[in-house]
Amino acid sequence: MYEKEKDLIGAFLRGEVDRRGLLKGLGAAGLTAGTAGTLFNMMSTEALAADFDWKAHSGKSVKLLLNKHPYADAMIANLQAFKDLTGMEVTYDVFPEDVYFDKVTAALSSSSTEYDAFMTGAYMTWTYGPAGWITDLNEWIKDPSKTNPQYGWDDFLPGVKASCAWNGQPGGALGSEDAKQWCIPWGYEQNNLSFNQAMFDKAGVSVPKNLDELLASAAKLTKDVGGGVYGIGVRGSRSWATIHPGFLSGYANFGQKDLNVSSDGKLSAAMNTPDSKAFHAKWVQMIQESGPKDWSTYTWYQVGTDLGAGASAMIYDADILGYFMNGGDNKMAGKLAYAPFAANSAASAPTPNIWIWSLSMSNFSKDKDATWYFLQWASGLEHAIFGATKMDFVNPVRASVWKDEIFRERLKKSYPGYVEMHDVSAPGAKIHFTAQPLFFDLTTEWAATLQKMVTKEVPVDEGLDKLAESINRQLAEAGLG
Image 1 (tube, one colour):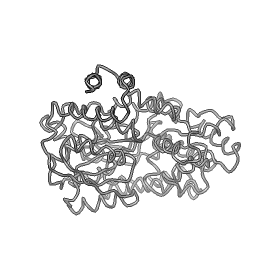
Image 2 (cartoon, helix red, strand yellow):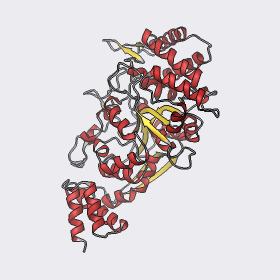
Image 3 (cartoon, helix red, strand yellow):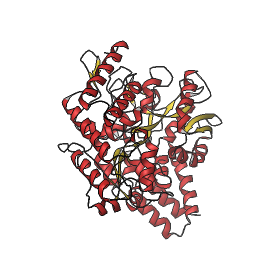
Image 4 (cartoon, one colour):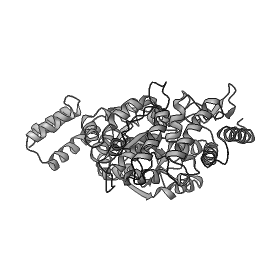
């Protein structure tokens, strides 16, 4: 029964038929979506198990610590596929983000064996790795007896994968030959423009192509849209998270850095250069003229909520923030569009700084081999395709998912410009910060200085000189400068 359909699915799994051909063939055969899905899942499991012993840890259990997030939702929705494939059990605890990282720190710092693996941001591994709390995953990735030959480590987007690896030396280049793979990329955020097309049309504004145009467009939108709408949303709270999205993406596009690394590995502040001061001056002006009135309180949530509610005309922030605001019960659902943004008119392409939700293995896991089986499945291509086409697992970190026509068409249909934005920006997308143990403290101080510039408590040039002095002092005290 269903032999022809099984043959068609088999041809797809061997790469002989594309996804469009598969769906067309199954539809012509009269299969219901449920039956087709059951057949596909069964044959995918068989194909995965054909050349790798996925049952090696059957009967074992792993426990996960998860942040409440669409990536976690997609994994949980597909978890039965992992259980069927491996015979393993998976339990998990899910916490909201406002307490999540405290839960992670508490578990790791106490050497708790409760959790085997957990979600993390790549930045956090700059603390967890040197502390000995997490495992270098190269040991498993490079072991053919423990890793599925179809895993496709080379399929991960290069800049994203490299951003999850660090040698532990302050100032060490991410992704270097001696880097330790502290986490596996799972899903990531670029920082580009998400905007309200109707508001742009009303104000007669075209999509800005550089920082000067961004200032002018935001000011015109603030003036002409009406109804209290402001031109551009960016983050402003006293947090490192204010610096890493749009701000650093534009800053890096001008070739500017957070820190210098000398030939002997010493670190020093790099944000008081003439070019940096010029960038800061324009960024501050943009917020003063066209940002929200209470900008200094703005986090991811306020920036996104205003766009979704029609209170702002555009945001320079995470692309997936714009993605989520274009759906659900948001007032502006279906009215948003997307565009790549290179702040520097002389730059050939955008250079977005990125946030990467990743998966790490606790160094205190009681069964690391079994845990790795879960990690390689959760970060594998089959689950990535499921999440991208059936759930809201954006942005995928695998190149092959971005080539999947079903996924691309899904985005193009409801998220105009999103695919093109990603394709143009992906080559320059990476973490542009310098990896070092004072990252969170120094970057939060940078955000605090930015606040003082916006409120005119300190001139831009003076503020950056004072910030550089403070950072250099802290680096020296920590033995890093």
